[in-house]
Image (cartoon, rainbow, N blue to C red; front, side):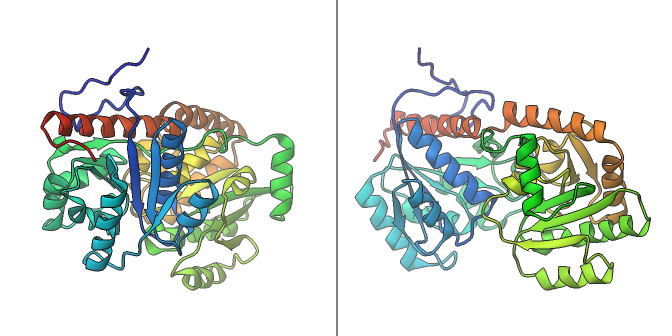
Length: 397
């Protein structure tokens, strides 16, 4: 039997609801970024989940970007657009032309540059939704207009992100928290042989204790503090041989490389560069570290937890919500190498603690952060917004 989610307000969706009205929708996501980070993982996962549910789900993205590459390979229909900046008039007109031709029910803007295009989409009968992923406060001049007036629904990926929107003047009642999702069938604990194979591929010895990190090599990700922490552990002469593998690319790679040399850990810390799939790195690891200075939620941490790894995470943004301290991992103060080192050392010395935390972390992600749950909650918001527009005579495309 199909049930319809009930809402006191069209923009306040019950976060525990996983059922929506049966009407199939025509939906397009807008993400013009060239790289493929956690946000793009969510965009592609959501699009595929919507398509699997019988909805028309397409993307508007940059044909030179990795999202276009991966989405088309997965069978998603993509429409080309390049957005140079927030005032790209040509891109706005191109977007209008696509929307006029394709006539979608819902247009979902996923990144900051995409958000700036939302005003161009008004007047086509479509419901407009935006997702905010970062926990820093948006522009107080632009944010109230965009989120309060230019769109029909606002998604925040964590309570911390919702709070940052409210602090910038966005009506909190217009914001629905929908957590990021993880493919829990793909990100899972490895078999014994899969773990051996993953460690062999990375040149990891049997006695090595591996700490991994995945994220852009940018200041906000806090890798410098993780490197300092590994250096401090190495200097203690601890019997556990800790190695650290950092995957990602970005503007401070050379800075990090110099820091690795300075703490004399060139044999212990490796920068792996960009990897297309973090699963085997996680399978080879004992602990995952996310020492971010800012973080909306932390998809990489969720993937690690789904793989049954305990996480050492900074006390910021959505991370403090995701990684329950002393149960699913260890939460440490930001910019604090000593605290990171102490947390890693504690986990290195206690295999039982790691196993217990990892198992609980896996259960938490499967129950609360699956890709299916994220897609269902997003679809509930779409349906509520479309229904409200229809009831007020706006119609849909």
